[in-house]
Length: 369
Ligand code: ADP
Figure 1: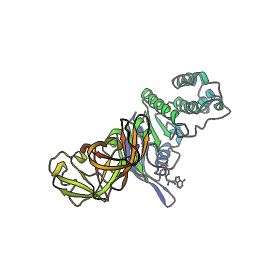
Figure 2: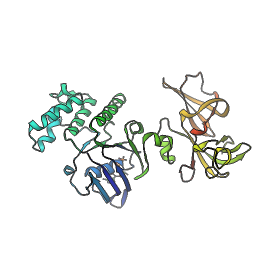
Figure 3: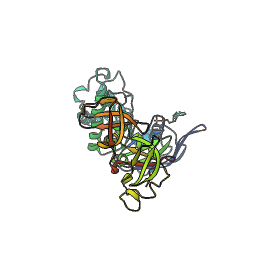
Figure 4: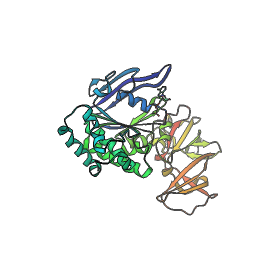
């Protein structure tokens, strides 16, 4: 088991810096997911932890020991990649036994570990098979088996589910989480898939352009995104946004959108009525401020009075229905749990409960308040 500490870690390729001073502490036994769009530097960061990329600057410690410059095999880590990297001519057993044999372990020492791993990963009946006679999910489990028999203090997963079809991805997600709950090892898991991050992580690290945007527990980030990037990255369909200017109205402050529509800001960002008009503190929403309102699709309510939305596209998923249309000139999505007989072209009116309105400074993107 190992805690991992990254202090001011950066990475340069020639003149180009791609990771800009990352500070991150990962507790022993924690499951941390690095998530962000393609090219944001998550794989580079993880490969530096693995010892597969040189660290250009900063300090890395694993289990309290400085690991900069330590060869990968001395870091006591196991890595599972997107490509399972199995040897096609070796059986499942021999694939899993490959590492221990290379390390010249006695078979009496590793055989029980392989059998235990195979049992845990539902591979016991497949130990004599070649990889080509396995399904994608089974091959991914062999790759995990190989990682597990090392009994590492740290597991690194780099987009391990990207090659699997949607159904298998969901199933393996649960299996990896269950595996972690059983082994209680430290895990760093890289993905571009925000659903994987939300469902698997103890803590999520959202990255963008080589920097950390926010770190927190999944629902903390979902409920209180620190900026527009995190707000739009987590959640599917994604949070809706409308930029406008704060104005004073007879009932307090409202957001005036480009098309003249006004959205009352009562209760936005959790403001409780203290120190301001209409429940929004003066500092949060001063008249004249350029502010972006964000509301998640599932938090929008149909109402007899409210903001008009002209419905353009309707997507039933079975469990819920997504309505797409324009609010304040921007495209918005509304998720309804009930089935509704709404047609494209129809106008509906909606309201936004104050506690589910997120306000951001339009220029800096930062959450207000
Ligand atoms: P992610 O895993 O988030 O998709 P990467 O860590 O793979 O992102 O890449 C981060 C950035 O570093 C990208 O802009 C990528 O083009 C750049 N990069 C990665 N590897 C190299 C390399 N060997 N040489 C130069 N640039 C690289």
